[in-house]
Length: 380
Image (cartoon, rainbow, N blue to C red; front, side):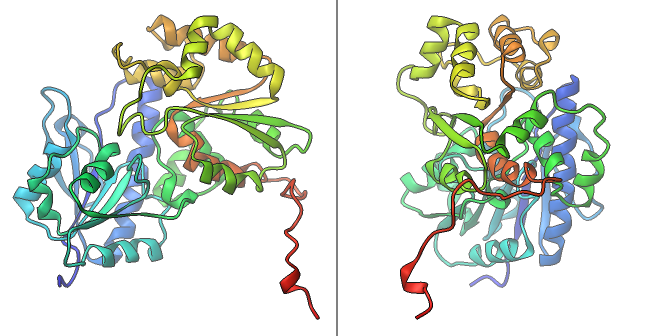
């Protein structure tokens, strides 16, 4: 059995020049710096995998491993290259926006896991991996690994590896993937020193997040949750919101396993247009948290660049070149109710953080639901 895990690898992607892209990149970098600080307690060799253009110092003790910038990035091949060069037995793999909220207890358990003598892995989310702990990592060299980290769980499970998933909570599920995620984290008050220092300097508030948080703490409100929402996450947060919630769940696993046909909501959006879509939404809810990717991304069409997607999340219509996304953002901004747009994390880890953040500064009963009556625990 290995004495300790050999390597922690943090993938930090390239960033564009637009304001929303830089916001996400800097928030990811700050989170990665906090993760590096936490990992230092476990005597790990830590490597940042990033393209040459992202020549940023994360910490003096951290090595930079340059990834290719010519052609599309391939997560699996980059990971294999690192394994061939370093020959680790145990391996922790993080995206730079993930893992920043993990406690020392969580990290310690992951470090112990990768010392196992048989091929196995634990994922923060099996269906859409943001970070993982892998035992007997050299065994990955024999596998066909995916282009993105989202599908890593499927690849290992299909190859017969023993796979585990972590308990869903803000610490394990939150990932900075869009500007909305950074703003949610800022409102939550969570994060390490580097993260808080960056988030506290953000000068421009989010256009709708504050109003959505108010609705979540309002007993009379209904908030609609749309997108790749896990039923477990919905169950967990429902009792933490004062409002009632409704959910329209579509697109789960779209990044890791693809989708069959056109999701119902996406087709409805295309048939009726975004104006009618948001009008109908306003007739049934007082606010909405919308994972827009299943609604707007079609495998048959090229995905717009991050500059467009992130500007859409912030309702900055003038910064969106793609007319389809620009129209969607414009109608969301004009909707009669506050609309929070983002990616998967806003209906995953972001929901757990919003369940905390909506009560900041409010002195009132947290739950709509009463406490559970358990007869067996009543005093005799």
